Length: 192
Image 1 (cartoon, rainbow, N blue to C red):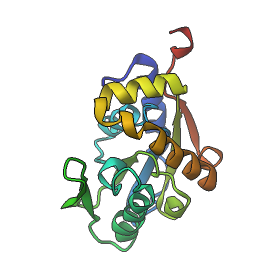
Image 2: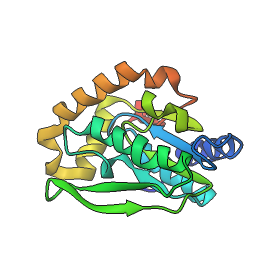
Image 3: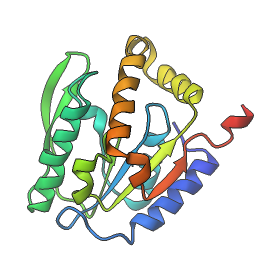
Image 4: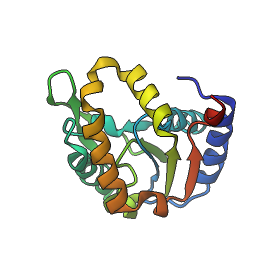
């Protein structure tokens, strides 16, 4: 999805802000872009990364299936943030959604800036390795329409289950309250 003009403006603001933040994981500045499913996280993260020439890691690759939010946060902290902090290449297993299990291993040369996007990117456990946390919000009807359009029938039976995981995580980790920046992931949605 191409960013809208307001989302592109938000990406410019976030990119300008994160470019001046201190490194949080070794020599790498790590930007976490968190929020509910369908909120606009991926669009914002890709736009910020494109402006700054940074790689993006998606939490979708780290989860252990529909009930794997905690496992995804564990991979983020252990396989990516701690390894960067220790001066090593990050290494994690990618989840194969079609096969229903972890598949190939992924690595990355330590970048100057890394963007991590998805539910769990701003987890409290990840905070010591983050340079900044952005929370992207959108109304539930907008989020649901986007998510189901993007993921189709595969997501329909899991929407409520995943939403429950999101709600528990966001409440327990106070992600909105700890966010450095809040971004409207659906500018103009109130007129739609």
